[in-house]
Length: 68
Image (spheres, rainbow, N blue to C red):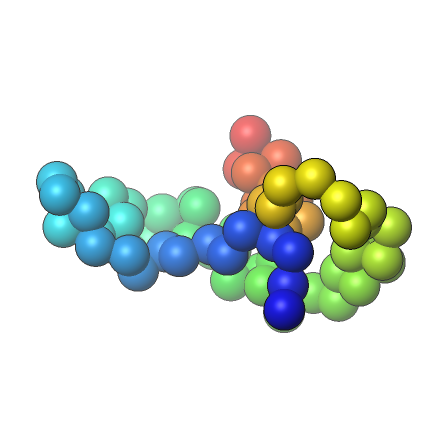
């Protein structure tokens, strides 16, 4: 079992109904996620400690950093 908080981009919300509704089809954030998801990020996950609460996956953090 993974110790990372899973990114649930298709989780329904109260308003708007889905994260997909927030971003238009050609939005930059969608492109960044598509580019980062297939990357091999095992070296970033190897050093994570197995104590404390769950952390966000390095792919999510990398996407935020690139988008920012």
